[in-house]
Amino acid sequence: MSQSARDLILAHLPGFPAIHAGRLYTDTSEFMAIDYGDVIAVGGRNYLVHKNESERRFGLEDPKYWVKKCQCLETGERNILKLVFHEQFPMAIGNFTVRCYRSPQKEARILRLVKGDMRFMQGETYPDERGNPVRVLEVVVGRSLDNEVEAVDLPHEAYFHEVFPGMLEKFLGTCEALSFLHENFEQHGDVRRDHIFVEYATGDWRWIDFDYSFEFHENPFGLDLFGLGNILLFLAGQGVHTMQSCGLTGSDLTATDCSALFPNRLVNLRRLFPYVPKKLNDILARFSGGAEVFYDSAAEFIADLADCRDRLPAQHKEHQP
Amino acid sequence: MNARKICIAFDGSDNAQRAATYVGEVVGAAPGFSVTLLSIERQPDPDHFPDESAWLARIKDDQARLRAALDAAHAGLVAAGLAPDAVNELVLSGCRLAFAGARSCLPGKSVAEDLLRAAAGEGFGTIVIGRRGVSKAEEMLFGSVSTRIIRDAKGCAVWIVE
Image 1 (cartoon, each protein chain N blue to C red):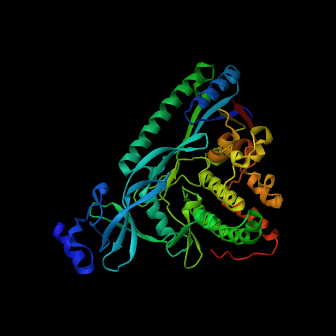
Image 2: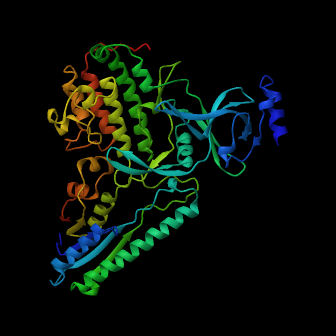
Image 3: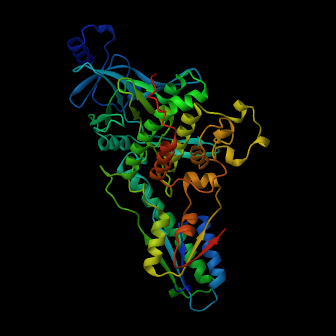
């Protein structure tokens, strides 16, 4: 078996050091064992594994052993292969804990649904020899939205007037994309700013990673909507502002000033930036601890946001990162 | 509207049992009432299971739990004085989809909507629902069946039992 992987690598990628050629995997069930130099054969192609994908938290690498950064030996293209990993775990959202499920079949289904829709990452799903649905993803060459915003070196007022209008326009597009998922009875499941990638070549914003799922019977899209509110807050505020970072104390604030789920997070941006339009602030207030009514759907959120966009001064400038 | 035709929104929870107990105490000894325990079966999302057999096993467990809770509530209502033929059960299943290649039936479905639709169809004049009381933050994130019923119910009375 190891000879087969070596042969494939030598045939397609002769520059790769043969000493690192590993095993050829047609069954990806034991994904922890699959590592650098191994080859995964799926969907009629062979993918050389370069490394495990990882998330960086607190300066540490947290490897995701079921997500492999690969190179297709036949095409030379870089791909990400997501292997089957069923897990469930408690996830803290503010003071609440919800059970999160990682579902390969959900992600595979959404990939089929959004095929050709460039508002989303693209990929195909192929069963391996054991029937595991392996998702072969195209790499979105870009950076996450939080990095995009953090790269803007402007004081908030200039950012808000010169950059934010263009970002709001893009954000509306991603909201429409999310609404499309909901119309098709699908949750994204992990709506956060680092799951929107801004493509370098086009500047397009694209959703990635659809494999989280939650059991919210009565409000299946509530978590997605809450995620949209958080992203809007981040975009409008050019970052997250907490009581501590603003030098405010609890006695300075009301429930309407802060997030319903993160009580130290300021949503009333007009407390910091009085030029933020009231209409926009009112949208953010729907995510505050003082809110009496909530958004029932992405469509409702989009309608309010589009109205807000239309009322912004017409000095939209396309942001050049 | 026949106010004496009562339905209890029943999901087998402690809140639902409390609502059933309350209804028994209020109307058990009174003539002319009928009470229906109305359940909307909430199937688990197939996406949360590695295969069909695990999903079906969970459905079977859930159904057994609901059956036991219905039996207890039913017996409690009769013990409270309702005639046996005045206590009914109506269990409406969620969507039934084959697992393989099927998309989840849960997203987009609202238990409250299903309850109200069924209640209207059966001509219930009173809907009773137990609730534990949720914070605004919980309501925003998870939704609330009782809040939706209060908001959307038409042509009937709604009793909330806390």
